[in-house]
Amino acid sequence: MLKSKQPSKRIFSGIQPTGNLHIGNYLGAIKNWIKLQKEDNCIYSIVDLHAMTVPNNLLDIKNSTLEVAAAVIASGIDPKKSILFNQSNVPQHTELAWIFNCIARIGWLNRMTQFKEKAGKKKDNATVGLFSYPVLMAADILLYKATHVPVGEDQKQHLELARDIASSFNSTFDKTLNKDFFQLPEPFILGPAKRIMSLRDGRSKMSKSDISDASRINLMDDKDQIFLKIKRAKTDQYPIPENIDDLENRPEALNLINIYASFSNKSVNEILLKFSGKGFSQFKEDLSDLIINEIGPITKEMNNLMNNKDEIVRILIDGSNKAKEIASEVLYDVKKIIGINFKD
Image (cartoon, rainbow, N blue to C red):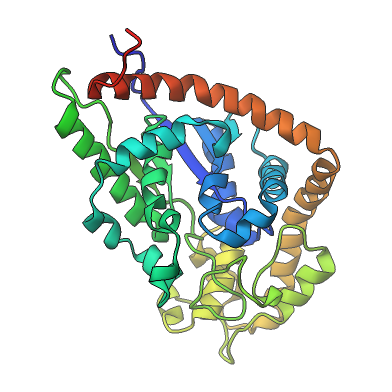
């Protein structure tokens, strides 16, 4: 008899521990996690195995994992309401990923645009992990039979791969049940700030790896740094319009308004109504105040947690144990369905 049950609704999401988290990570992922944990069954992972696909990340991965965990907890993720753990503490992720590697097709992975973007012209020098990590991502999601996954636009393709792998597993192996073993997970795209862009280039995503620190607001920035970065953020010579359509060819202006809307929990149209006809000088001052008021307490709590790393480790170990209870049952069933479970 199979052990695992399909939940009516379960959220899974992960964040890479590459350190130096910024407001793009906060608005695009963490803030949505906080909303979801109020009503849903949520599992959140610091995906340290994914971070290893970039060799430079290996130099300080332990401290980066603790820092990102501190940011998540300081932002409002409650380990008593949600399961919070680091991926490498649950070995079932890699075991299921290998099984999925034997199901996924090279052609599916060749279509992944993120690999092409990250590998660039030096594709032959990229690691195998960078090429195949979407399969590990599928294992992350399906190991908990997640029904919904919060994703940005740039991650939708990876979720489609997870759905393809789930469908292939169901059709290939599961001949004994009246219904599919894996439910196909659905994407959750929440909030006006689907993708936060660089403060220096509205066509490029805000990134921890950008050479210019002025391109992003880091969660560890103090209020003077935030004020200066917003003041110097690239805009244009035109006033703020009344209609969002008028922002179509103004990426920097649209980005700042998106950020304002996300921090104020208001729609873009509401922000345009408030500031239409005005220049960006007063807008930037108000935006700085918004960010400082919300990020300031998070920065303070992150510093407190990083001065007490044993507490972060305790939380991650406790979350890992909870995650293993679910993961071990699902993997047990997967191996039983395939025919490689010899325990009974």
